[in-house]
Length: 127
Image 1 (cartoon, rainbow, N blue to C red):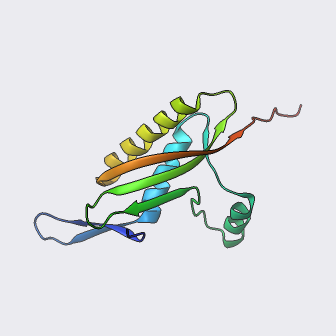
Image 2 (image 1 turned 180 degrees about the horizontal axis):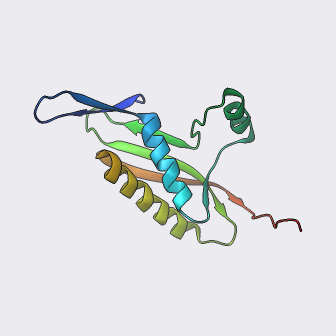
């Protein structure tokens, strides 16, 4: 499996379109933010590294493309807000990722795997 970019050949030989995996990761990350009660799971250390290098690397999302089949799989690691149904959040997230990637990139999408790494508790705002 290749982890660098997704390549599209055009039908009229006008050239090649290459989409970096970071683009797919950004689209998937945006889909996570559209699903109420889900957030991308990252560790504290990963968050500090992102702040230091001033780059958001979407560490909770992984994109792999099978060279033989051309199918792209997306793995999304999330935290779910306490009290919500994990299966419903996961299904909604899979559909949002699939819809956004299909609409924006025409990627031949294989699997959208959702891994629930934790449950987060919403903090009440201080008065």
